[in-house]
Structure formats: structure tokens, C-alpha cells
Length: 290
Ligand SMILES: Nc1ncnc2c1ncn2[C@@H]1O[C@H](COP(=O)(O)OP(=O)(O)OP(=O)(O)O)[C@@H](O)[C@H]1O
Ligand SMILES: [Mg+2]
Image 1 (tube, rainbow, N blue to C red):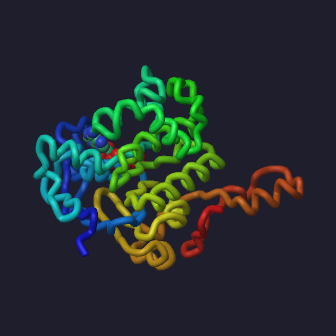
Image 2 (image 1 turned 45 degrees about the horizontal axis):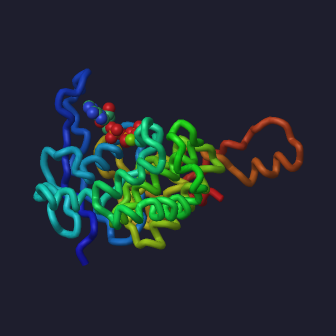
């Protein structure tokens, strides 16, 4: 079966980067991966490895130097005019920084309405009801519709960004570090919301994160990026439990993670300090974050 997203030997170099990269390095170097319809696919790698760059190429916002991105077998570079608008609607994105993603001068309801108007979704007279439903679907009180982004908490704002992205019923959602800026407890709620909505609607999600624990918990397949190259890709259990590359092993070992069970035990026993609360998991023992 044709994969929904196919990235085929994509290379990219940022033109006019300043300061000029010493090695004239590629930001993406013959990156290939494929994502099946309906799955959650994780993309991991350290900061600067090219994750967001790859997301922008898949979204059609950056043109690759060589290679191609195909959605449902069609090269995205071939879309023009109306077809391009329809294509853009199929693919939505949620970024880490919801404050930057939402227009600060627009109330929540106007932000949501704008997306519906642009793509002519539903009849205009029903938009208010649709917006109310949307807010409900991301667990927000309809009363928040008249607020501006800065009058919301980070978690509430990210819910609005998710509602806006999903209002267009996209086939594909690209989530670039969607919970990294949030408190741990809120992270878990937003992750559950995002994965629940995607599963319910059959939306395919490319989930970008430096948190391997989260990726392991939600994704079926994962690709590991290092300096613009795919180091390995495969089912999460294979890649995380039996990493083939030393880079993936290093990544797994070097990421500090909160050991919730230990933290809870310490709190309950009244032990002072936080020694051990941030655990560094040994390779192969990367369990899901509770
Ligand atoms: N607009 C740009 N112009 C020039 N170079 C850029 C630009 N955007 C990113 N880069 C460079 O491309 C490389 C990949 O950046 P990218 O933002 O894709 O990394 P990332 O994996 O998303 O990192 P992070 O985890 O910090 O978000 C980095 O070396 C970065 O400095
Ligand atoms: Mg990034």
C-alpha cells in the first residue's frame, strides 16, 4: 500500500545562513522515511539535528535541494492554485510555542473562525456553534472563546492551537514539540488529548520530540535524526530496546527523565531533596512515562 507520507532522499541546505556553516553542511542529507495512514510516527534527535527543517519540507514551506515529498503518492511540488489550498488544508501543524502561533490581536473565537472561513468549512451561520463544539472537543470552556491568547494559560493556549489545527479535519497533523513548553502534569493531559483525537479521527500524526519516553509511549514507528541524517528507523520497540546505532544508544542514555514513581515515593516518605528524581535510564529500559 502507498504510504501516506513518503519522504524520498530529501536534501536541503539553508541559503544565506549567517554565520556561514564551516563545512557547508546540509541541514538534511538524503532523508527518507515513510509514514502509513493513521499511524503516529515519532521523529527524534538532538537540538539542531534537522527535525523542524524536515517538518517544514513536508509542509511544503521549504523546497528541498534534491529529493521529493509525496503525499498519497503525489509529489507535493506539483500542487498549484486551488489544489495547493486544498492540499494545505489536509496537513496542519501544532508548534511548541502556541503564543507565537496564535495571533495576539485575535480572540480565540476569531482565530478559530478564520481557519473555517479561509477553507469555507460549514455554513457561516453555523460557525459559532462549530466553534463551541471545537472548544468542547479539546476540553475548553466555551466561555474562553472571547479571550485573547495572552489571557490563557500555556496549556489552554495549546488546546486552542490543537482545536484550530483539527477544525480543518486534516489527514495529517505535524506536531513539532507540542508539549515541550508545558508543565509535566499539563504535558500528559495535552498528549492524551492529541493522541486521543488523532486516533478517534484516524488522523496521521508526525510527532516531533526530543523526549524519547513520550515518543515510545505514543508512536508506532520512529526515525532518529542526527545532523540531518536518518540514523535508524523502525518500530519503537526495536529502535529503543535494540538500538542499532551508537548515536541512538547515546541519545537514550543521555536524556534525563523524571522518575515519577521514585518522586512519589520520596514525597510520601517525606524524604528531603530530589536526589534521583531525575533519572538517567539505562539503554533498553526506557519505559513509558506514567
Ligand atoms: N532559517 C534558517 N537559516 C539557516 N539555518 C537554519 C535555519 N533554520 C534552522 N537552521 C539550521 O539548520 C539546522 C537544523 O535546525 P532545526 O531547527 O531543523 O533543528 P531541530 O532538530 O528542530 O532542533 P530543536 O530540537 O532545537 O528544535 C541547525 O543547524 C540550524 O541552525
Ligand atoms: Mg525544532
